[in-house]
Length: 109
Image 1 (cartoon, helix red, strand yellow):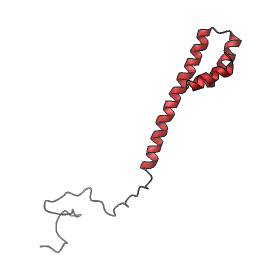
Image 2 (spheres, one colour; image 1 turned 120 degrees about the vertical axis):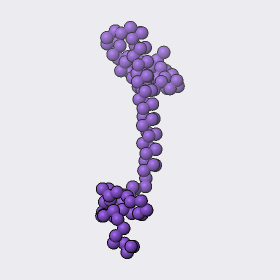
Image 3 (cartoon, helix red, strand yellow; image 1 turned 90 degrees about the vertical axis):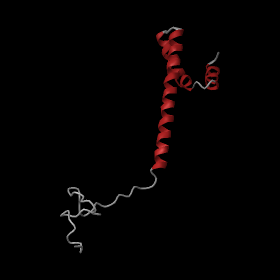
Image 4 (cartoon, helix red, strand yellow; image 1 turned 180 degrees about the vertical axis):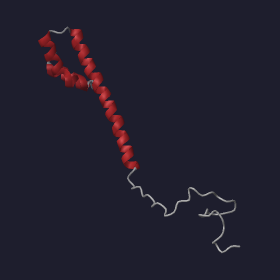
């Protein structure tokens, strides 16, 4: 089987990782006289690596797409209040705590 036929068959079978790594793996195998099992193992490892990378790209692209749609509206924050009532206790029947905690100064007896 010729190189072009092998690459065409890999494309038809959607073995894109094998197809991309084919020339490099074959040239290394010829130089180092690797056994056929080693060559097939290297091709399979290249395919597995490519599929994992494709899966990660798919997941991360979906996450980025979701976030970009989610946060299109700018977040508007309120200005901090001029006075903080954190240290005051709430008195029963009082609508809003004052600095003294009582009702004096409101025009009520």
